[in-house]
Length: 263
Length: 264
Image (cartoon, rainbow over all chains, first blue to last red; front, side):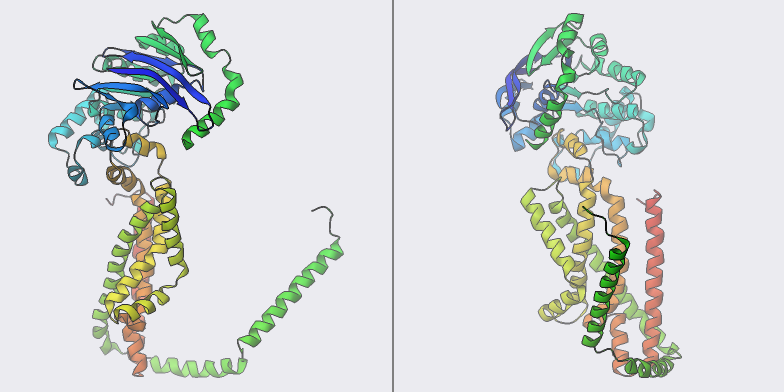
């Protein structure tokens, strides 16, 4: 379970990107976060994984019955909590020159001790498990290929297999289908959906119709606030409300994101 | 430019540049005491000298095998140490892994090393460590830093920060990120650059031999000292073969890596 409480994030220049985002996600939830560019979706995602630190608020994550606040984690404790947060990205972000299987193994790096990882000490049982994860995303036959030789859809499946193998308590997906063609996008959504039965899955999407079709819940973020949290059957009025002014904010958005990288 | 130079002005400028150049040319020739007479004499002396070097002393060939081997070993050992040492500096000097101040220090050390010719380094080390192959190894290893460190660091900086972030997001330590992301991504470029450096080190190791680091370079130097020119020319032949072969081998291997041949 993950609970986001009143999370705010301000840039060094004082601009507030998140103005108090709160929501809760539990096992069984497949949440689609919608919102115009620059609304704070990606920042929310980055906060949920500790890649960005919220200015105020807390992100409570329950692992093994113990609740930890991600917003207060640093260094070692942050690494510790990240072991249990799976994340897949728009650009797949795999290690291109490693094999598919090795990339899946990387998912558990945080959980094995440094001595074992220094000697590539993954056990046969773990390799077996990694292969099972690949089977789940239906690319076990590619296990020994170099990632660089795979298509985008296949690479995203590797990323999902890595997250499955990681055995996280939460799975985050930052625009997982934005770089894929419609048919591959649907396949990836079909793979993500059943995962929600084992852990909350939270994804950022740019295609409201796809999110509405596969997600169990929609959260809309605009101007750093949650403006909708509920059924995936979103009305046209809401969509117009979410995306209405997007085009006029482009310049601001570019500036914001470049500042975000700095911060 | 706010106004166009006329054709006349342009040709005047060319003439002016040519005059300045000629002036400096003559001035430097005077400073270096260029004397064509020396050159004329030298040609004949050189030819007679060359004839003294001919024919090479075939009997000495067997004596050259061990020194040649030593030269290769010095170069090899120096390249291995140098590569490891440079990789450490490269990690510290790569913007995507290191902190800004550490990066600046490391990059400065590399640039400083590049500015020092190997011969200066060995003269310093001979003064500090004495004569022999070991100072040679150390000098060549240190000599790798400027070139290899820089090339490695640049290769590391090309690894996508997003991939690094993705692996960090599963809770991996910095060590693990280096091992599982950086190393596989930069390995082809590291191997290729290191082979190139090995080739350079074999040539330098011959040179360093002449200032006391042992190996085949020392044989050449020693033979000249004893006026055994035929023996020297045998040694030179061996050096030629050595350098040629090492270049062919490194070219072959590097081409194979570039075309994605299986090596690992």
